[in-house]
Amino acid sequence: MTPNGPDTPTEPATPGTVLVDAIGTLVTNDPERGKGPLGEIEDAALVIEDGRVAWAGPRAQAPDADVRVDAAGRCVLPGFVDSHSHIVFAGDRSREFAARMSGTPYSAGGIRTTVAATRAASDADLLAGARRFVREAHGQGTTTLEVKSGYGLTVEDERRSLEVAGRVTDEVTFLGAHVVAPEYADDPGAYVDLVTGPMLDACAPHARWVDVFCERGAFDEEASRRVLAAGMERGLLPRVHGNQLGEGPGVRLAVELGAASVDHCTYLTGEDVDALAQAARRPEPTVATLLPGVDFSTRQPYPDARALIDAGALVALASDCNPGSCFTSSLAFCVAVAVRDMGMTPDEAVWAATRGGALALRRDDVGRLSPGGRADLTLLDAPNHLYLAYRPGVPQVAAVWKDGALVAGRP
Image 1: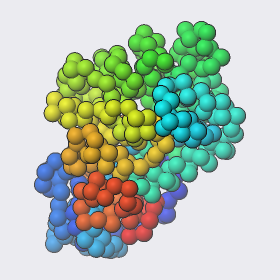
Image 2: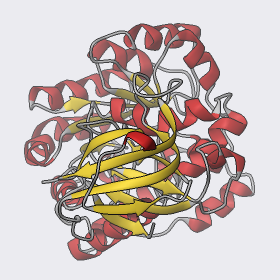
Image 3: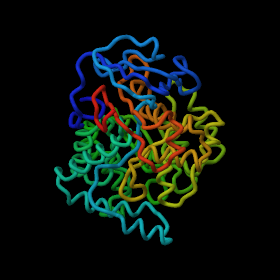
Image 4: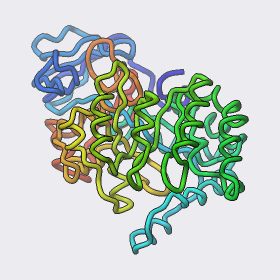
C-alpha cells in the first residue's frame, strides 16, 4: 500500500524525470537547503523521479529532465500533512451546528448521533464518503491524511470502519474509545473491557495507531491508560485526544506513554506546556497537534500556540474533519485561523501544517521537499506561502501532486 492507500485516485505518474521549473518561492522545510526555518529558495526548481524528489535548488542550477512543468513564478510547498481526521462516517449534524451557533454548548455526546447513522450505513456508502473527502482534501493541498475509526463502537462496526479507512490511507487509527457506546451507558467499565479485549483483537490488524478521547464525558485517566496500554501491547502506536473541553490528564498521559501526538490542547496548564517542551527534545517527540477549526466551529477559546512554541514545544496543525465539531478538510483555512487567532506567524503555521504534521505521524518522507522525500507538492496561485493567511477563504491551490502523480488541479 502507498501512504494514501491503494484506492486513492490519481493520474499515472509521468514516466522519467519531471522538472517543475520557474518556481517563485520553493518551501522545502529543509533549513540546510534554503533560508529560514522553511528552507525557502527563490527562483527555484525541483525534479521528480520515481515518485520522489530527486533534486531541489536554484533554477539556474537545475538539471535536465524529460518533462518540464512551468510554475510561472508561483509558490510550491510540501503537500499538507493532516494528522487528525474522522472521515469514515454517515449522517448529517448540520442542525446540531445551527443549534450550537444559537447558544447550545458543545459536548462530546453528539458523537452518538453519528454512531447510529454509521452503524446503519453500508460499507460501500462509507467508502464512497471517505473517498469523497480524500478528493476534497487533495483539492485543498493535503497529500497525507490520517483517518480514525470511532463512529461504530461495536466490534464489527469498528473493524469495518478501519477496513474502509485502510482503502484511502495507510495512516489508520483505532478510536474505539471515542465515547462510551450507547448500549453501555450504564456500565462504562464493561465498554472499556470490550475495547481493550475483543474489539482490539479484531481491529489491531487493520490499524497503525491507537487513540483515546481522554476527556470529561468520554474516558477518564484510568480508562484511557488501559486503552492505550492494550493497544500498545498489540503493536499499535499511541496518540491522544486531550485537554479539549478543560484542563485534564490528557497531555500528561500522552507524554508519559511517549505518544506521537496529543491533539486539541485547548486548555493547558503551565506544567502541561513544560511537559510538551521537554517531550519535544526526545528522539521520538510528543507533538502538540492544534485543531483551530474545532474551536472556530464550537466557539471555544483557541489554543495558545505562542506559549507552546516559545516554550520549545513542537506544534502541528490538523483539520479534525468530522461531521460534528468541525466539518472542514481545509488546512489552508486552519493556517489562516492559526495566524489570525492563535499567535502563530505565517511561517510557523505553514511548517506546522506540513512538517509538524509529519512529525505527529512519525514520518520523515513527507512534509518536506528535499531529495529522498516523497514528491508530494502543492502549487499555489500565489507568489509565496504567506498568501495562505493573507488571502483567507480564497481558493489558491492550482495543482497537487502525490508520489509524483497529479491528483488535483492543473499546473
